[in-house]
Length: 229
Length: 279
Image (cartoon, rainbow over all chains, first blue to last red; front, side, top):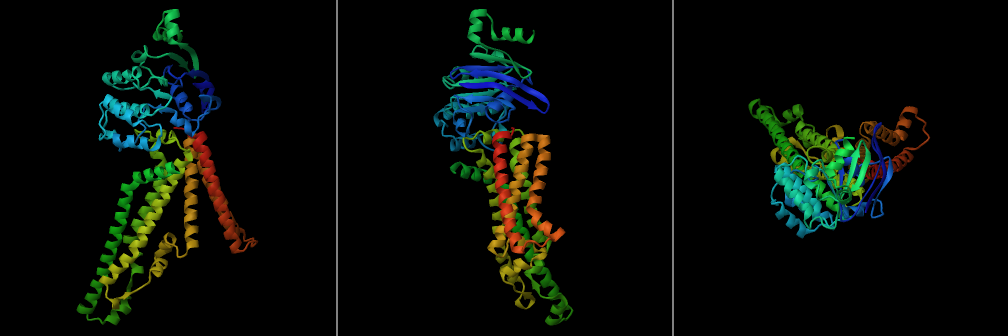
C-alpha cells in the first residue's frame, strides 16, 4: 500500500500542498483529480522522491522510499524519460541494463500491442507514440505500483483508446496504480478510488464503487458536486 | 559498482561525437600547424640562401634555428587546446542541465534508477575526468608524432632538436607544463586541484537544481567559500607574510584542505541529490 500522510510543500511562500493524506492499495486504480495547480504532479514527484517536501510522510508497503524501491514502484511522467536521440530499442536496452525487474517478454508484448518499432528514433515519434513508449517503459517493469501523470494529455483519440485498453488488460492487473488525469471520461469506469484535490488539499476521497452503489452517482457527478459547490 | 560503471559508459557515449570532433580538430590543427610553419620557415631559408645569396650561417644568425618549441606557441597549437578546455568546462554545466531541460526529461529516469543517486553524480564527474585525461593523453601521443613530422621537413642544420620533456617545459606560456606535468607529484597536484574544482562546481549546480533562484546564490557562495578556504594558506602568506609555515608545511596543508573540500563537496552533493533536488 502507498500511504501519503499529511504531506505539505511550499514553493517559496506559496503553500502548494497543505497536509495531503490518502492511500492507494495494490490491485486498485486510484485517480488523483483536480484542476491545474491542484498539486497532482507535485504529489507524484514527492512519492518518487523527485522533489522535497516540508513535512509529512510517504510509505511504500510500510517503508520509506529508497534506491531498492525503484524496482517496486515506477513513475510514468507526462514527458518521455529517455533521450531523444535514442531509438526505442536503445531505450529498452537501457532499462534492461539497469532494472532487474525489467520484463523482456512483456516489453516485446507491449511493442506489438502499441505497434511500435524498435528502430524508430524517439525524437521522430508523434506525441501519441511518445506517450506509448513512456507507458511501455513503465509497464514492462515487474513493479507492484505504477504512477502515471496525465497519460492522456494532448494525444489523439486512437492513442487514448489504446492506452485506456491497457488498464483493462493483464498488464495492469494486480498492480497498484495512481493516475492523474483531466480526461476522466476515458477511465471513469476503470478507477476504484478517486481523490479530489483543490488548492493543495484533499476535498474528498471515495471508493467509486461505493458511490455508485450507495449514492447512485458517477465520478463526474461527485466531481460536479465537490468542485461546483 | 556495476551500475556506476554502466552510468560512466553511458555518460561517455553521450558526449563521444563532440569529443571525437575535439580530438580531430586538435590533431588536424596541430599537424597542419607543424607542416605550414615548417614549410614557411624552409621557404624563407630557400629564398634567403638561393635568391639573396645568404650563407646558411648568415641566415641562422638572422633568423635562428627553428625548434618545435616555437611552433607550440602558435595559434595552430594553442587554439585547439583552448577550445577543448573551454568545451570541457562548458560540458561540466551541460552534463547536468541537459538532463533537466528540453523536450525530454531524462533526469526523471536517472533519479529513478535502482541505484544510489551518488552513482549518477560520480559517473558524471568520472566522465569529465576521463575525457580530460583522454585529451591530455592524445596530446602526449601527438607531440612525438609532430616532432617527427617537424624533423622530416626541416633539415638538421636548420633545426634545433629537443627531447620531449624540454618541448613540454619550454612551450609558450607554460600551458603544456600545466597539462602534462613533468613529475607524478605535480600531475597529482594539477589534476587533483582540477577535479576538486569540478566537484565544487557540481555541488554548486546541485544547489541551484535544489533551490532554484535561492540556489544560484547558495551555489555561488559555496563555490567562493570553498575556493577561498582552499587558497587561504597561500593567500595568507602572500598578503600578510606571517612566515609561520615552511613551504613544505603549506603544501601539506593544501593537500589536506583539498581532500577535505573534495570529500565535503561529495558528501553535500549526496545530501542534495537524495534529499533536495527537484525535477
